[in-house]
Length: 327
Image (cartoon, rainbow, N blue to C red; front, top):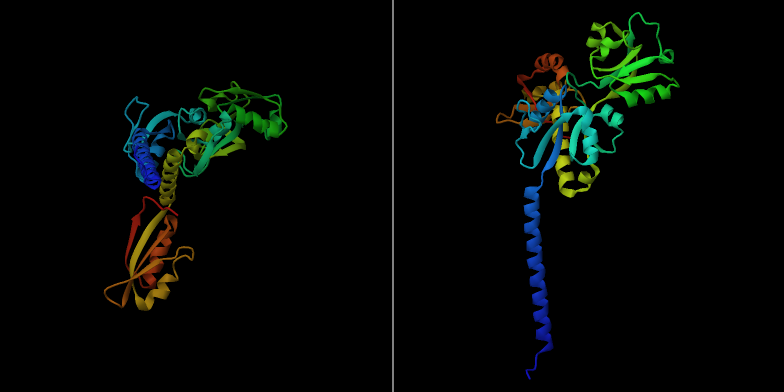
């Protein structure tokens, strides 16, 4: 019978155990890499009025989206994202159900669908402006209706039925609210007493002889996520990166960069013209008598600021556009 050394046997068992653990860890890493390659974030993009402004925003954020004619599967230059296109009215519901991991839709449609989703970020853009989209209560110019209380017992047409019902309930008014399939502005006074319609500028309402009585709801575009997708580590990280870049692109819409050369002797005079909240970057130049200044500033302030900077002594002033500003 062979006499085995207990210490040697213990060392051997420990070595075998560590080898097995290492092999298992490598297998898990291989599986994780394969799963990551297979994983795709299902992104819902709005079709219709928000389509062009959304693809433009994604382009500014660094994502190229190609929407082919009559296709509901846009192509995107990120292999980890799969795009699907739906009406904005439907996206919140599909995100809640997990058909989409993440999507862009209006706050109004989240409310209308009573969707239980994660609101990741507020993206303040719409089809024509950066202003919130408004749902307004409107009546014909000649109507006797002056306040929401005057709608008691009346009939209202709208696409935003549930939100309108809640609005009326909040004002203690009982009225009939019917769904409108489109062309809502022309239905008052022919078919209904009032309408609740979405608008940015009010142009269409005025063109159809309507006046605004009250604002029912304001809405901005939101990036929303499914709860299970948000709980998944890989998807959550991907969604956060997407939100950061989209938010950065939106911030850049209203800002520009300025750079200029300034004699060191006039540095205080030039710096004094720059708004206090926009601390400039100041760099030395080869010529010790000069410095370079660079600053990010609101675009609307530039036309008044540049003449002041020039008068204060700045030279070689260059204004340039920005793609992203990430704080």
